[in-house]
Length: 262
Image 1 (cartoon, helix red, strand yellow):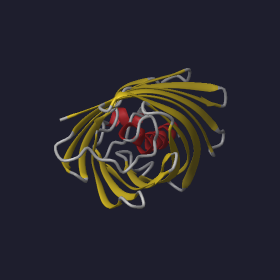
Image 2: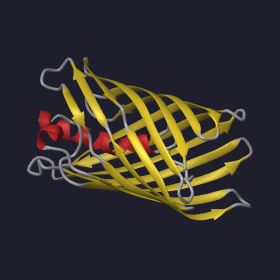
Image 3: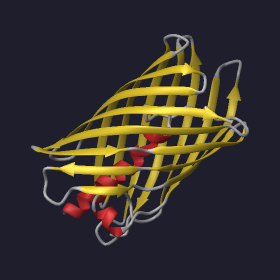
Image 4: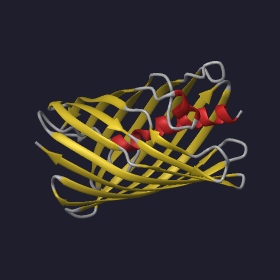
């Protein structure tokens, strides 16, 4: 039972890890790309505190993402996710790498007059070891996901909408053969000034595995400070609750740095 819960937690971690690949600190991505030959490095520090029936778990991660613009509308990226888990539950502590992600973002539609754009983001997550899977660091077999992204320019800034589906495969197939996820989220982002943006994000994710479904609702407030056009500093606070019994409440703080260069 403990292994099953850890594996389901790994599926949730894998599907929510898109935060590291998005418009930091938001989980919701936008349709923006780096342009032909453009490069971007994102690094963040994520501190997550989860409370479950009197037990507490603290997860700290430092996702690192490198993105390269293959064309004006096509990005390729690779992401690694060093993670540390500490808990007052015996045997839950873990250290190591989560799933390495390889992905593409393709902006396939853009109307400059209306400010509307659409993109697809397929992603493959490479497996971790059996021990890392059992510890809840990631999935032990190759997993994948696909996100549809809509961005709409508005008078105050932009509104971004994501619909993401994923499938997570496990080495422990006799216990949990797979986990299927579906996430929807929307995030209006205000251009407060030339250097500051503020974002409000609301979302819902369902993960189904071995006949059980856990639904997580989340809300995040984020701020992005850009001292120049090639550098962003991001801060975010996310609060989430899931439908499991007993229910888990999670608070996540993120600080991130994004650097763009050629």
